[in-house]
Amino acid sequence: MNAGHQYHARFFNRGFKTVKSALLLALSATAITFSAIPAMADDVNRVSVGVGYYDIFDDHDAADFRIEYRPGAAIIWELRPWLGAEVTSDGGLYGGGGFLYDFHLGNNWILTPSLGAGLYADGGGKDLGNAVEFRSMLELGYQFENASRVSAGISHISNASLGDRNPGTEIMSVYYHIPVNWLASGPGSDSGY
Image (cartoon, rainbow, N blue to C red; front, side, top):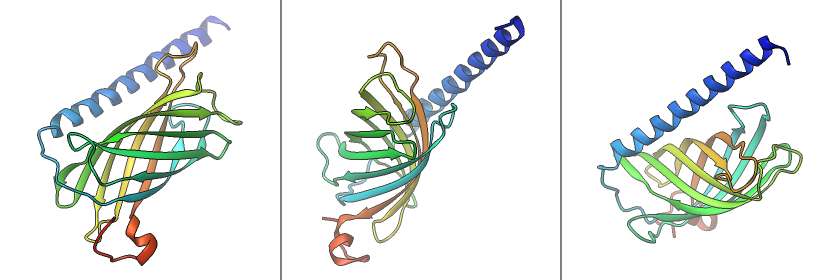
């Protein structure tokens, strides 16, 4: 690699780290800002389906498809569990679970950070460096009167340096969260159980 290419590679890597650091700082500031807002009770069980753009800051672009189960019952301190799977258009597969917290911002808007861990297989897609991967996510959503929700989020999956390599990936997604009772009785039922 000649000196010009080395300079551009260093400049790009420094710029990417700056963007990533700014994004993490913004997410942290948002979480701190809204941590003083009390959560409102929401005991609706939901199945969440999502579609997204995988690896938005790198060159392993793929479509990302997700399905999750999000029980309404809190485990501890209003933390609720989630369990899900996602598959990418290039064969990557992730299955995991963790915890989430809903911050009700008023007027049906909800900010939902979540953390989790799971297993990853790259298929024909991006090698994330380890089978064990961790997911962090921040969603902003709107809850309708019938308890369904629509949200947009950004997530980060990486192995937290458990492997020799830890390239990580970011995914931008949109979700539709369906109350479980709709699956048996149709939209408009009163309960999400």
